Image 1 (cartoon, one colour):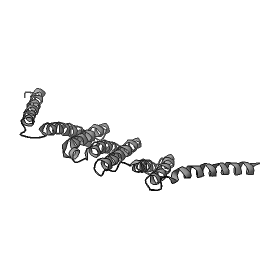
Image 2 (image 1 turned 45 degrees about the vertical axis):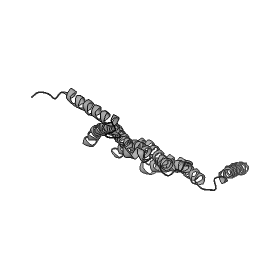
Image 3 (image 1 turned 30 degrees about the horizontal axis):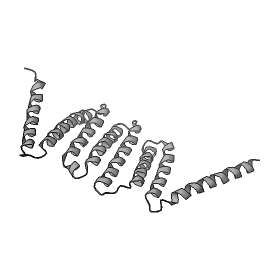
Length: 203
C-alpha cells in the first residue's frame, strides 16, 4: 500500500487558506482568515490532546494542547466579545491543571495553573466588565493558589504565603484600602514590643 504523502494535506490546507483569503478580500465572508487559523490551531490542539489522553505518561502534551485550544477559542467569537484573554490564559492554566491531575507528584504545576487562571479572570473583569482595579482579585487568586498547594500537595510552608496574600488581597479589594498603611505600622510596633518583652524575660 502506498504511504500517504503529507504534502497532499499541506497543499489542501494552502488551497483552503487561499480561498478563504479571497472570500474575505471580496467581502463575501468576513473574518474568513480568522476562522482558517482557528481551525488549524484546533487541529494542532487535538493532536496534542490525543497524545495526552491516550498516554498519560505524555503529560507534557497537555500544555501545548490546551494552550492551542485556548488560542483557537480566543481567535473566534470569544475575542470579539471580550473573552479572548480568559480563553487564552485559561487554556494555558487548564494545561497545567491537567499536568497536575495526571500525576499528583507534579504538584509544582498547581502554581502556574493558579497564576494563569487568576490572570485570565482579571483579564475578563477588565475586558468584559470594565473593572480595572483588579489588584485585590489577583492577590486573592495567588493566595488561593498557595492554599491549594498546601492542601493538595501537603506543602505546609505554602500556608504562610497563602495567608499573607489572602489577607492583603481582601484588604486591597475593599473600600478600606487606606487601612493597610496603618496595619503595617501596627504590625511593626507590635513585633517590636514582642521582641523587647521576650528579651527582658530571658534575662
